[in-house]
Figure 1 (cartoon, rainbow, N blue to C red):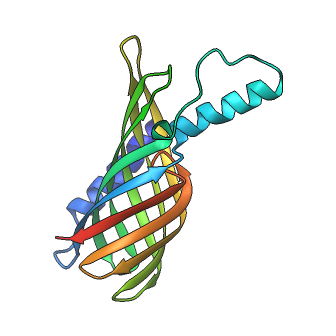
Figure 2: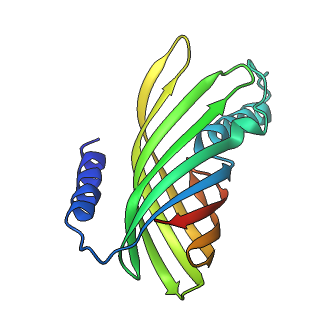
Length: 175
């Protein structure tokens, strides 16, 4: 937990002391096959392979989804920092809500005016809760491959692993 706190502090300080030449942006995205729902699906698959009966129902497609809002600040062309706020719901007998805030670092491998190829890493605290239980955990997102098309308003697609989703698509607006 101390490492996560230090990582959050590092990204916060970098944004506060960044120069005035950076570009601010906000994005909205939808992610499919997030870490919370994916772990339940994997657990059910492993349990059923050993012959165990499922005690709870399977998760549905909505339970594997995440709704995300992100803020970004380009420190320079190749590097962006900011944060991702994620909400997901795991239903079908589990009834878990999950809210996650993750500071992020985005490295642009290719940076053109209307196309970017990038990788993204984010780590942060998540709160899982339902009517009976409340817990805090640390979750992450590693988007190894990301493509962004457009300039002031751009569309993006990411492939990765984590709470934001394995397949993420969205739109980004420069402020």
